Image (cartoon, rainbow, N blue to C red; front, side):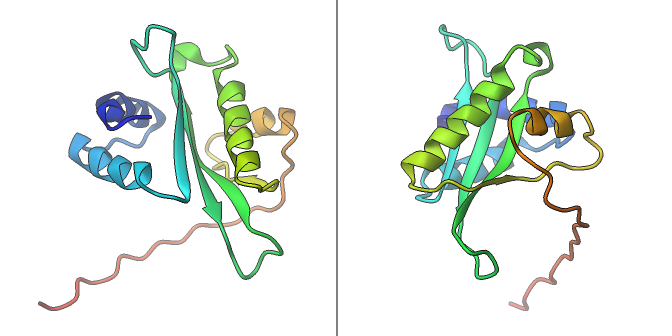
Length: 144
């Protein structure tokens, strides 16, 4: 992915139900593209006229796990490109990136509101490890 892809990625995010402002996506993408621990890979046709999908991956060291792992942080495939092998190709590319990092454990989280994604990952050899709730709290702004 390139910084110039931000407008197309913004459209994909909206399609998945995560509408975002272009400026915010541009800023986040710039940080990811310069990160040593993150990568975003895209699926495009040969003429590069569009982005059919993307996968984001990140190295995740943690004290509670026995080994550092790779986490798929996002997988989005444009509606017209679904069920064509684009998602499988993107996950395979993420796994290859993990292997180049010397890591062999890959984790992906799939929200319960996306039941169609669960058999997709299981069909690729991923197995469900747990179910959990995600909590969020906005921290107050520090005083000036």
